[in-house]
Length: 328
Image (cartoon, rainbow, N blue to C red; front, side, top):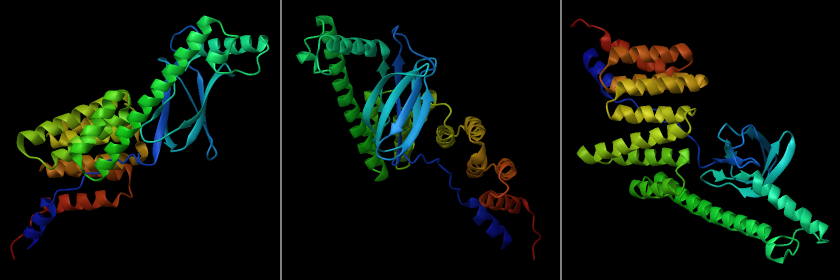
């Protein structure tokens, strides 16, 4: 009887814990900043103010002039760029929905706009009328402002197409309509290859679709999932959830050493939840029939999180499986 019980307990595959991003509720704002010399501007302060409800957030541009602020709720925001404490440019009324909103700044163009406005005021103009009506502008200034207007319109159209594709992919993903999800996320990835969240959902969709296939078709989808998790990590290597889900995809391809490496990275990046990542590795090993190593992983999960009940339970099952019994 004990032997049968032991087989029943150990034989059932463990459920792996995918990290949830909650993308249906949160998004991000990011962009590139060029200085007045036309080069990427490092260290510029980006101030993000939510307008529909109270909220203020700050970040800075990196050495490539790029900034990113995630975890923002859907809403309306004003984004201001400051250099040495001085506001240099702003974008008002940015609405976030689905994929991250892209807001770029070019301080060279901002300076040209400021000069145009000053010229208009000096000529006795009232305010800053549209470019085609502003007789205070030189032909070069008018051409530059028209160029900016067209660029903004093109970017808005691109952002709308990106958001539409991303949201259609999310709807299909939630409905487990994997073919449509893959199609829509693939479209979004082509519209903007810099969006790590798009690559991660494309990977999720391929892995989800692989579960409904067998043989070479299944392996092809798993390979795509692994590839696209890698792309998400290349863009945002500090996200533990990407490393976790990448590891679980690797486990499906039997790449256990690499999976362990990725889960260890996730644990290092997310110390408060490290137990979950060690538990996942234990589950992978149990499902691969490596119970001794699985026991060590569950012990590690308990070590970093002494209140992890599931880890205690699974460790107990492993230990019961190793016990010997004498016949009645």
